[in-house]
Amino acid sequence: MYESPINEIVNDICSELQKKEDEYVMKCVRNVGINVDKDELLKALAYDRKQYDKGYNDGYKDGLNEVLDKIRNEIRDWQIDIHDNEYDAEAYYYVFERIYKIIDEHKAESENKE
Image (cartoon, rainbow, N blue to C red; front, side, top):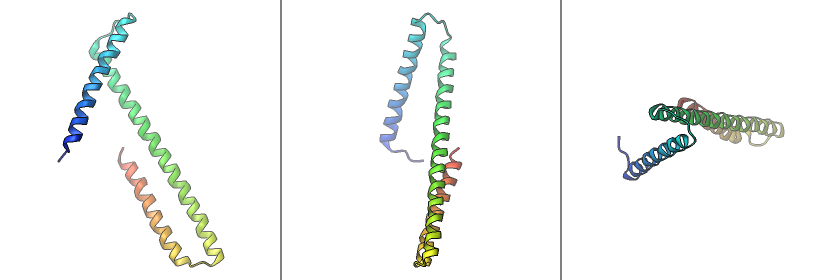
């Protein structure tokens, strides 16, 4: 799969920054007198970062789903109002169905990213 040169450069820079951060953490831990195996500390840091990323992604997904559910409920309220007031309901329902489809696609997409 093609990856643009800028993505490769950014990934390289991020990798270098990660290594420097890991070395700095190791240095700080040792400076306060804690004797720890470097490989074990790096494994723990990597695990912690993955847990943080997972928590962030789960929170984002939950927040997105909450917003999409609120939008869906608002649309239902609008549909009731449109029906009760006899607007051009067919045109509005078409728009609402398109919005429902978009919401459902986003929810499915966010669930598949896990």
